[in-house]
Length: 191
Image (cartoon, rainbow, N blue to C red; front, side):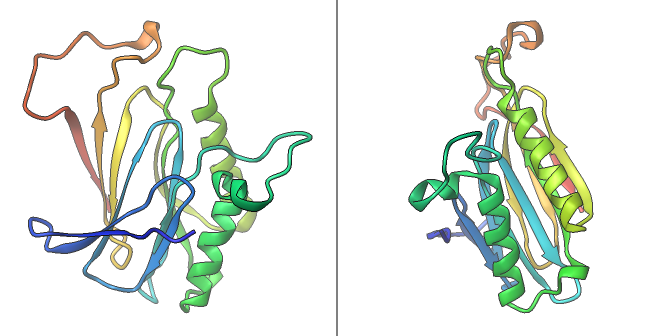
């Protein structure tokens, strides 16, 4: 599925493409910035720096799991499908597989539970990219914060804002912050 939520951001002087769960988007436009918000989900930002082509996906789970199928509309929720969709989209626009590089984000543990879906998602993304021979040049995965990610696909620039989550696991929950106008903290730019 292709991200269809576009808006213009005067502050960024760019067209924002909002990539939500199950979507991917590829662009060669230097005025495009792709955005998403992640908890335990993963977003892979993959680009061919020589061709000036990049894209982002957003997936919920690594795969359908034992005994379940990922056919039809459900397939977009799973990492294997999302990664293939993004890579094929890049190649169709003129990227070369041997020049691809990746940055991955998300995989947080935002809820107390026995399983850590975020860690499974991050491990899947790392393994998939390694198996495909695509180097990970930067990553920010795990932890207990949600993330807002902005990706400029042509240049590869990424800006991440960590967002405090009140329902993080008790053993790692931070004290309640002093009320502030914005709930994000920890801006980080990765080049």
